[in-house]
Length: 389
Image 1: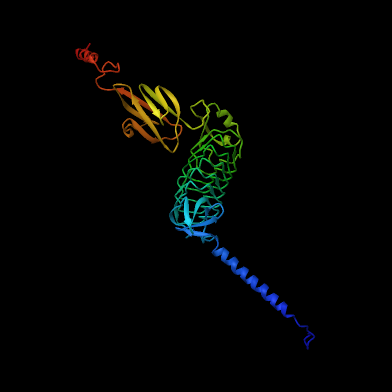
Image 2 (image 1 turned 90 degrees about the horizontal axis):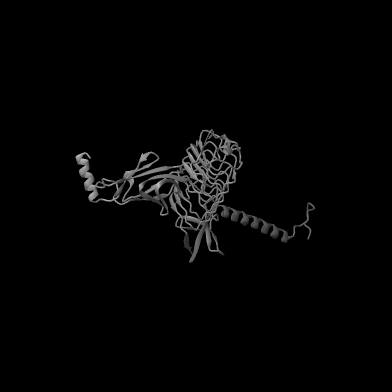
């Protein structure tokens, strides 16, 4: 019915009810959205690690506590070891990934162990982890997102996994403590500023699988040594600020490198010693005629100079086998006598690329005529020496 006075019409009661419902709905949505930002950023927390769950696949990815810049800094600290599996509400989940921003801005995080169940590391996963000095990346990882380790100023070493195809832009940007990097032959591209401003990075190894190197990929790294197997054209500024580094290239290709944009910025280009196509960086060894050397159980050198595969930044095993009545006398590596490091004719050592070893075997006391055996003839030789004959 119309309302008397002032000519206003009555508002039907159902309108008030409808408006009230809308208001309540907006209020509830607002509260829920607030809760999603501050509480529902993760599905569960187990033994101090936050996870998002895939209920169907029974997999999980490591995530953050809260997303806002700086608010995640206390979520993870110290040494963190991520398990390959964990139990939650009676169900076992496999940890398959490190999510975007998972450890972002965790300024007191010092080390992380990533299990071999993990295949992906997300965007900004460890960005701005100032104190992160050690991280174990398994070869199961095939994807690492942009900025994943950017700004990790304390990270001294990092192993690029063998299954990785692309090093994205800014992945290791401003990792100021990195000293050397070996790019595995699974990698085909290196993105813009991937290793930019890594001021202590002095040595890198680039395999021939790489067909693309981005703008400023290695800028201002203060490189001293670069090992390369590729001659493809790439961004001319990829190595800006590193012109004084020595570039080692496959045998016979120095001229090609000097005329190829990108590589021609280097003032010093030297050819490696092997004439073969290099799969790994090779190792030159000289061995005299009084014994043989076995490297990693397969390669033997006897009375010759040759080249063998060795593994960089991992332990290699050298076994020295003297001939009868001979002994190992001296082992020199890159001009340094390391004989004292040999135990029971075996040397286990990490050997840098482009290295040279000289092994000397000598006759033992008693084999005076140097015929490889000790017998009566050596007595005759001794008598002759005494008599001056």
